[in-house]
Length: 101
Image 1 (cartoon, helix red, strand yellow):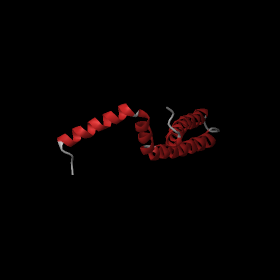
Image 2: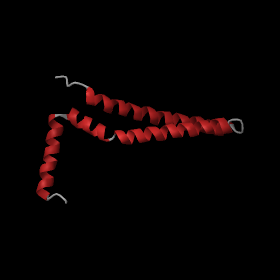
Image 3: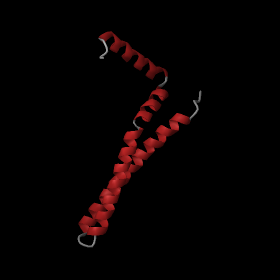
Image 4: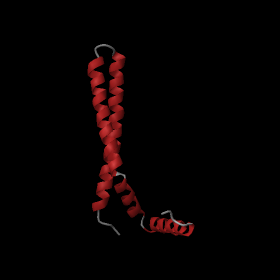
């Protein structure tokens, strides 16, 4: 059932007030909700790294340029993996950190 215009307005005001009062809570909730997306991207990055390794090993002796393409794929996938693991660690760490006032 869709929200009425008044209910939508009240919900929006509540969201803004929550963000103003406790931005760390909002960030932690957002990070926890996207953890499965980051895990999926990390797995795709690992798969891409494996494909890059196969390209490197299979084609390096045939063509130097194809071997360098494999290295480039591996580098790009390592960047994706590192970035997403960093987000996962931040999301899991924000759940357990005590609030410092």
